[in-house]
Image 1 (cartoon, rainbow, N blue to C red):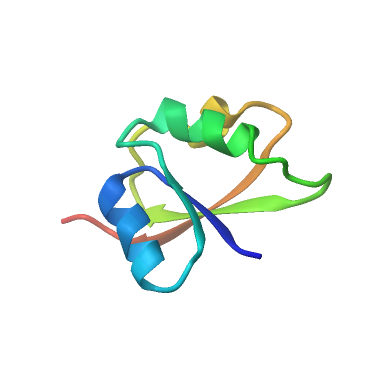
Image 2 (tube, rainbow, N blue to C red):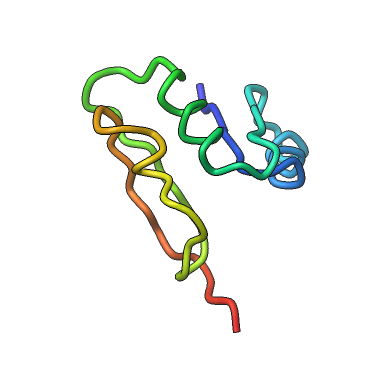
Length: 79
């Protein structure tokens, strides 16, 4: 099953509206998001998809820690 860990409440709500049943929000805090991901119970070898802007705010891989593999994908650029 798909689990979404969202950095903010609006993104978490958008995931719920799209039909995702398991959603948690870090309430706008990248450090808290990293902790949520690190405690999500990922299986060995699982990769977290991190869609976002070209210029990211914060260091999600650093916040999640060395045991979590995160693939960052730029979906938009803020002008």
